[in-house]
Image (cartoon, rainbow, N blue to C red):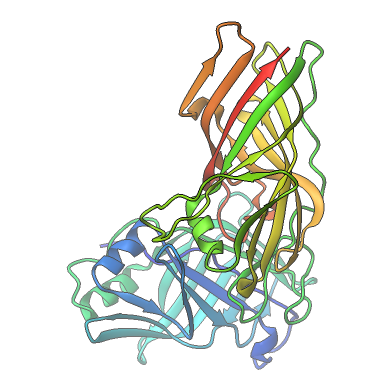
Length: 398
């Protein structure tokens, strides 16, 4: 039975070309987060996944962090041997995979290991999409674009038999990505997403270019009032509320806290922004600019950034929400404007127009991580295309 497992956000740092005996402190890290439907099935079966550094997240998934003991970067392949073990335990039984190693080529990525003195087996197999794996020996960097991870057949069979499971659940466990541009332990490289060695938390440098606003057609009329409500992905709200959580600024308003069962405590998931300016066109396109901001902070995981001055652009398949992004620590954003989420107005819960045609309301337009996720605030946490809450908007024209 070909089963799938574990996994998700994998961040690997390759620092400088060196022989296999180079120090672990400068070789980088690999982080795997067990999440998604199949991981939940394993948890329901009583299976626990662990590593030298394991962190339980608010949504029930587990982040596993491994330190690379050396690295080799070539023109077509990169290799990171990893310290520690990956273990699966259930009712007093355990399977431990040792001699862990990440192998990345121009068309594939594999996390491999051994059980006892046995042969090396594939723990996690991923096939990158779009740009695949980019290797840069001169800069000593490795970048793996978003991919889906699957548990290797032999590893799945080993977990199943040794833990006496009826089956290892099949299904996608989440994205696997790797980006490195680190020049020294704990510092940032050329941009995008990096990982501070040993931290297990993505460090996102944010957008490198400024996003321009949607052009106003000559036939457009002014928007005179508008209401914009941003509902943030609930799991991310729960995650940052493990730290300091969210605060509003510059006129933004936090909606009342909601007591959702997944959180166990009331949390704020929605934020409203004061209207500043806008336009709408008979073609159906529109742009509404607002003021105010929301700060997200989890200092223990080096997260501290603010999204402010949202602009909602309704333009068919190119609809989006742009924000000005500023931050510090592991989320060091320079204040540039960037696409925070892409929007799909056609999939909104509802769209209504007033009898005079001047007031238009979209309720809960689905929001998604943008395609250019390497420059996104949330690139270190989610894949491009991953759902990220919704935007509701009402605007009135002259």
